[in-house]
Image (cartoon, rainbow, N blue to C red; front, side, top):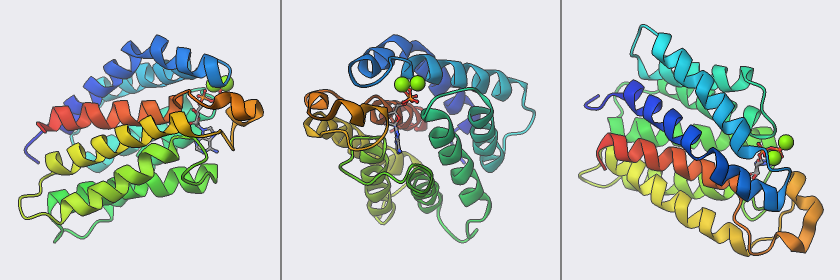
Length: 210
Ligand code: ADP
Ligand code: MG
Ligand code: MG
């Protein structure tokens, strides 16, 4: 691996903590206003665990992030983000060594999307983080097939698709989770969980050099 995943995850953890107020403000319009606090608390624990960790194996790193988020007390985001990172680590661990690093990166993002859908049972269009991670996984799979594909180009494609999906959540009525109680009043507001997914992918893409 030509880039340092541990450094990238540390950087993403700090960016999540910096975005705490922005994420909570989005959640204040749609839910209970705690999304930024939950994300920041979880990723402060991630930063601590990564800093203390000795090794540098990508699968181990992602599994550590996943388990740390699962163990931190969070709202809906905890089990969703936690299982996404955990599953992406498991996918890397079990991936065919003959695959390119671009293909392995795409497989890890696909595993994250599957995990979020399995856990939360939300579909595309329900106005959740699924609206960011599913198009991200699709874009990643397509980017991995390009001739000059790398982890960086795959992450860049995933981040751009996640950002577009997050933008589209403004036009959606929430159909699942706490926000669904507000019904039509959720129109015009961007989903906080989708915003967080995009932030993490953007950060990783930037660290990968894309
Ligand atoms: P809580 O609603 O428990 O306060 P958070 O504020 O941490 O949880 O997270 C809210 C975000 O969680 C939403 O913006 C949405 O993206 C995501 N979310 C909620 N329920 C689901 C679900 N069933 N599937 C996928 N994502 C969900
Ligand atoms: Mg909330
Ligand atoms: Mg809550």
